[in-house]
Image (tube, rainbow, N blue to C red; front, side):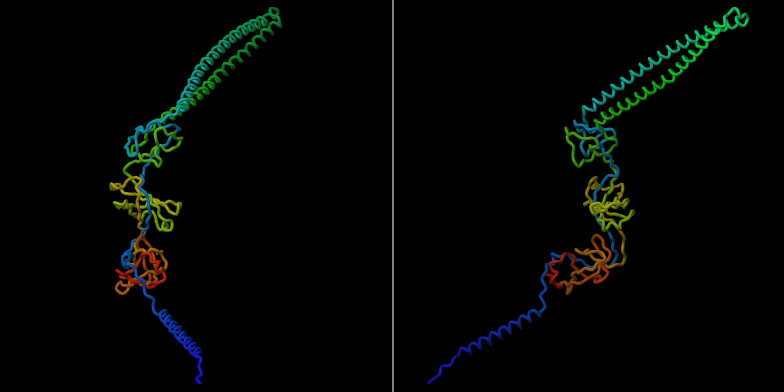
Length: 421
């Protein structure tokens, strides 16, 4: 009799064996793949910015935006508030000294001038009246002095006559009469002295009163002139010859302006200077006397640094660059320009174009072309002095090396890239 064998354990053993072999093979393949070098990613050569390392003279420069402004500018502001009735000259119009460019009005100014004139006329009338009154009082007092003088003379003659008669014959004049005439004479003498003193006081105080009233008239005349000047200022004229420049906020006829508000700006033609804003981190190398190149987008003008603002505003330092007298037609007031200040010239140095993330005196990683430009490998270099478009290379590169200067941050995980044409 045949015995049926159980084959299930054998099949199960074979299945486990084959599974183990498959897992082992998969592990070996995975380890092998990982041990292989990773393929370099491809980069389109036309999308990267490359430069060749050179040896020679590098010109250090700092750059900043700026504006051309006139060296001589005269602001015209409102002396008194008023309404603009008429604008006679628009920006860009050449004007001569004294030309009227705007007419304003303010009824209050007219009323104040009339009031000041009225007060002046009243003060002048008071002066004339005071002069007449004081003259009359002086004449009256002079009459009193003359009358008192005559009375004193009469009293003195009576007394002298009585005194002589009394000396010749005491019985002719009583002693009491002699004493009375003497007292009358002394009284009249005292009254005469008082009246003369009063006349003198009148004369001295009269001049003081006239001087005070004259000074009051002078003050009122100043008020009249002041208000007249305010009225005249409503007819706005230019103090110097030049060209009218535009305002940030143009004015319109019928607009009300306040005292001190800017009405216009006169630019004296012929002389312009550049105000350049240099980043504060680079401004420390700028000194007065250095040359600067001013780019007007169509022309380049050579100038010289003449002033450095000691304050930092919005992270920049403003410098003034004086320009030559003969300027190209592209140079106009308020024109936006770029300025490059020449700091120094470094002779016999290795330099290259400025990398995207390059900083002066720092170590940076950069891609250098190898294998005839088919690949680029990451290397570390040390930079030196920096300029606007160039940087000194102190370590890591040699003249003739070609490097990639553009942003390669998306390939930070790779040390080698392939360039495809």
